[in-house]
Image (tube, one colour):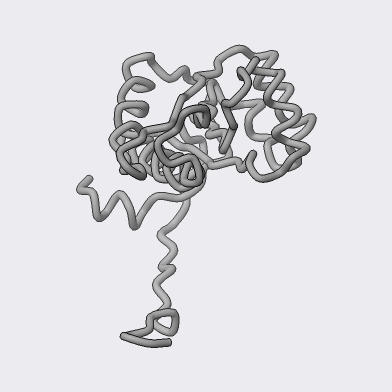
Length: 169
């Protein structure tokens, strides 16, 4: 699938088979994530690959939209090292770009994934930080549930010409 088709056809997947995701595929996802642009090329991101069933099963206890994590074989927590960052005010943008790259790579590789927001919800951040033992100065942005999809969505055309403005509003 070419890049343009990957972008147009990617959808959030919330149902997964019991099939495992290989370390090789996980590395490909992380390589794609780390190719994202970042402010001043600061690359503040860190990624926690979570396969521990106890950790995965704990997430829905504090994240109301994360029930699918219980059946996902893994999730990746996208975080930012904010201590001594080149552009500390841009970590959310930088890690969002990395997250989107990861989602697109998952789809291109035949995997399903869904972006679960952690930041800026304080109650979610306060629960996930000790769960995965984040050190001081590392902030969680998003948890991506990943697996072999057990559902497939039809194409949804989201193009809205009325949202396009030229030169001025």
